[in-house]
Amino acid sequence: MRTSRLRSVLWPASAALTSAGIVLAVGALMAPRAVAEGGAPFAVVTDKTVQTECGACHMAYPPGMLPTRSWQAIMGKLDDHFGENAALDAKTTKHITDYLIANAADAGGGSARRLRGVASDQTPLRITEMPWWIREHRGEVSPSAFKDPRVKSKANCVACHRGAAKGYFGDD
Amino acid sequence: MKLKSISIAVAAALVTASAGALADPARQAILDGYAAKAGTKPSPERGKAFFLAAHGGGKPETASCTSCHGQDPRSAGRTRAGKAIEPMAVSVMPGRFTDPAKVEKWFGRNCNTVLGRACTDAEKADFIAFMASQ
Image (cartoon, rainbow over all chains, first blue to last red; front, side, top):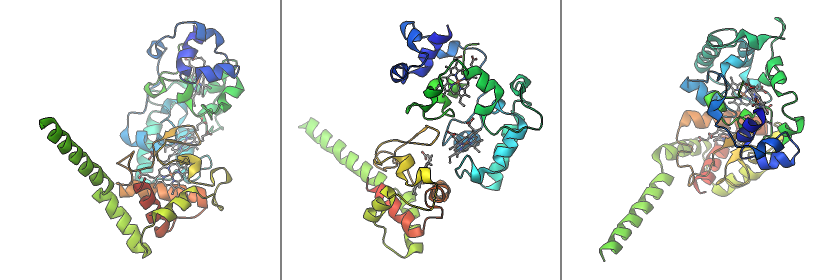
């Protein structure tokens, strides 16, 4: 069942990715299922400012994917944001920080389960470095899939998870 | 006869609408502001050369505006994280360069990333003039 879901999330890159030797071959023979049938969705960003400012270069990631300290660290150095300048004025920065913190994995609508495997003195800056993320993708996605030109980066969740903007990433 | 005059009227309306879009007062004000500070007349040709050039001084992986915006301003570009960027050409995206705060924010970020410095007022005026001509 996971594979059939995969086919639907990987559209329209499915053909290219299949030929690139990724897990899709079986799924391609099965009827695609609706993305919305997936499991518990992540709470999406509902704040307009966060959507605009943090959704310009990549999707506005659900705040429940990282702990408070990670959001604080990210928001504390936006002028050097993964090699890019994402700086904002102080007022906007504070507004966004408050929102992310209120909805972080260890707060608000988050799930402490997402912090499993992260030592309390560690501050991951990437969702894709979180143990839960690595677990979910290990064995499910071949490493070369992330380098496919249509995907380009692990951070491009939407390329594979068509329902990501609505908070749907899987079918658990 | 009736049909013909209607279609002429529609065509005329479309011409006015697109001319209106190109000369959006908000964008014109932004352009005029940069040109006045620079003391030069905006040049779409210089803007084009600036857009296409590979610059030094910034991040090697994004040496040109085209690294993210693509070679053709009328087509979509792509960020480093793989997200699509809507075209920069004003003919395709009439809302471009009409919000002064947005324009300044992105010049600030992207010039820094590409050139390792701020863009000059002349470069900003040329860039907008080029995109407005596209």
